[in-house]
Image (cartoon, rainbow, N blue to C red; front, top):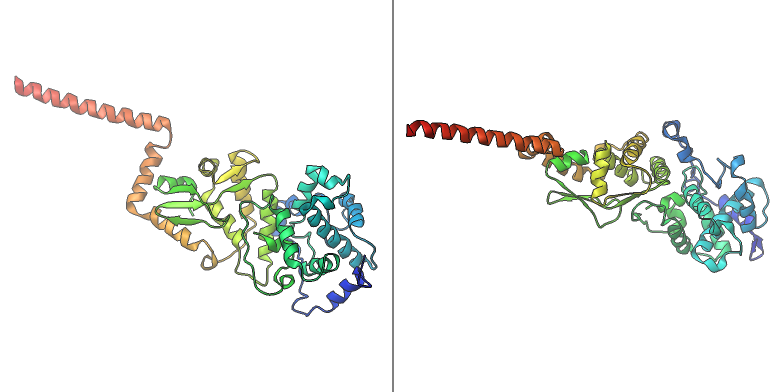
Length: 369
């Protein structure tokens, strides 16, 4: 593949050699053992290896032919790998966006499971290329300074896998300097206890992270749980924990922490599901509660002063800690937790009323005599 008399390999090497020391920082880290030990498979690609860490995995060889088909020739091993991987990603995004570009019989777009696995694999923390490499290749393939198109195509490609509505803080300047890799495109008390304390839990209308507490109502935008959600959340969290540019921005980590505060048991998931906050395509309520409790083990920091839901957290707890609300919560938990408790309470009240009436009639009868 050439562009203006210069092949992709040479152009890419010149671009990388020209990087400043601050820009050339390590873009792709390894997931540490603490994260990996909880769920190893969540960080391992299923179908395609991008970058150096999983490049020699024998079970990922199937996509190498597609990389060669989507790219062209190149020179040394590292550059060859980056060119093949980068061109594969760019062509995959373009063909996903424009079906007319797809080759007849391209199985990636004919078999749903392949596309689903590729979406997951391209968001794994260890399975990335520096975004500046993708931008350079995109310049050579599509034209210079079309990076916004690359971002739009990537957002469209991942739209079906990112849970809830996307959320991304865009920064000014050249896009190739604003993103590290594709992962940069992302986007309290238990629920049962909140309900017992008189707090309404409703489906919010904003973006995924727009959780608010107002007028005794906790509003949470809907979250779709499916087979890939666990892996995506874990890798987004790992990415945030290694982000040196924005170490205090941890939306996904804080979001998972907040939901883990709400969810301890299946009945908490049931409340969120019944209110349209959790759309569960994966398993039963117990499976969802276990997923969040396990993911929380991977979250490190931040301190409470950096917790982006600190205001919502404090306001809900302040409401629950009011004496009247504590008493109402205790009453609901003791006497209204299930139908049998309600029946028992009604029976006790009826017996009390009958006893009082019997006493009154006895006293009235005594005075009539």
